[in-house]
Length: 238
Image 1 (cartoon, rainbow, N blue to C red):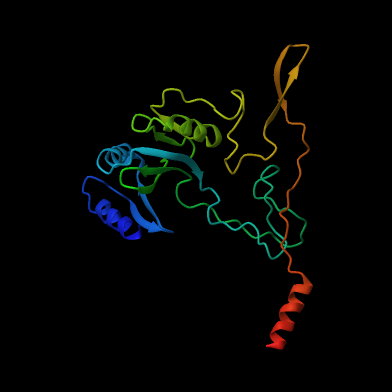
Image 2 (cartoon, rainbow, N blue to C red):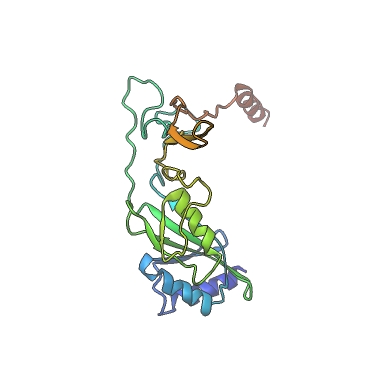
């Protein structure tokens, strides 16, 4: 299978009609990247010329904290995962200044497509970045793969990525009156509003969240003393 993937990768790289930003094999899977402007043309070629007749999955990705280490499992954390309280805030009291957080480099949002060629027994991962971070947009591929309908609605609902040309782009997992997009890394863990049914008004109403904000400090993985002692004993016996 690896040799067949390598042959497909070489074919894609040398296809003059495809303007690929990247094409590589990692962990036994073929990955390609294109600009958002080349997405539809590339998808048509993959479907018509390379036999990728099925879109198995589509997902949005938020790279706002990609490659940024906020905490270490071997020691207490200077920076907590308390995005529900105050993003990038110190999670515990300290007389020392917290370690500065790196700023994100590159574009924030991307859309990843998992493609399958049943006839050729190929799988391929296609990625395209949204050009704008404030209003992420991507052209819809629903006219190429009809299965993209609900996948694109999910990416819109959870990450706020808009898909140009989608015939019915609306929320699919959260309520229609939901505020925000839950999978964005800057979305508060407790949310913005809560809903309940009011028997007097005979309808569902939305109110500010009543949950008390709190800092969620990740559990520290500690090495037990007996484990260290057993290792030392084994080394001594050796």
